[in-house]
Image (tube, rainbow, N blue to C red; front, side):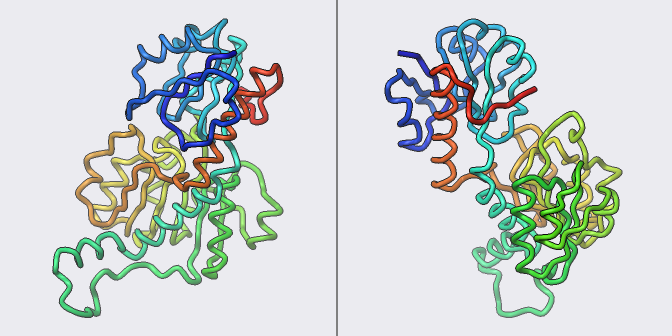
Length: 318
């Protein structure tokens, strides 16, 4: 019987396929410390980890010879030193595909909320300030016929763009390679990133965090956006310069923004916290019952395969 550790409580039933093994779960509602992780990897055969668990070279060195797989409960895996794990003979897996639609839904929730000032208007109403219809209050951006820029046309980026077709939007996308099927399906046009930023009325970010995408939307590129533009990020926080984004929002150089991810999670840049034209969510892109249960089941399947001497169905290769 193998020993499996799960670094956070997951939806009930998601790990049923591992019932023949010993499965221990972190019962405390908090991330594990580095010291706790180091102790765990010396004792367990497999670890199901989360995106806020730092599986760095030190943890992997401690795990070598014991842990057979780190199964990441996420599609992104920038929290794991994949090259170090590969060198140590430890498998790494993720949960691609299953969270595509849920994350695209949240991207649109942010687009609509930020573009039409839904949160600020809700707060205004709750505070008893609503005195009747007003011709100039909470004027937002119109979606129909607008230019919609998708940065990163993977599964989630394409799903987000697909929803835009119902609004009659013109879709521009930036991606390392052309996506011809996507272009045909959504009448999308591939452009350079600078062109996308200059021409888009709404921008949604969907790139993974890599050395190439770190600070992809830096101050110089953010300044290319229209002052009427809306920017949404459901990818990874370090992809854009949060401090400069906050400055532009405060100075009226950008209409509004919606963020579900942050550069220093769970810390949020303080300059964003007192702005009425930004919507802030606590990284809930995949937070539907159906999706989170599927993610748990997929992580369990990856673990079960490796413990059975097989390749994980969803391997991450350096």
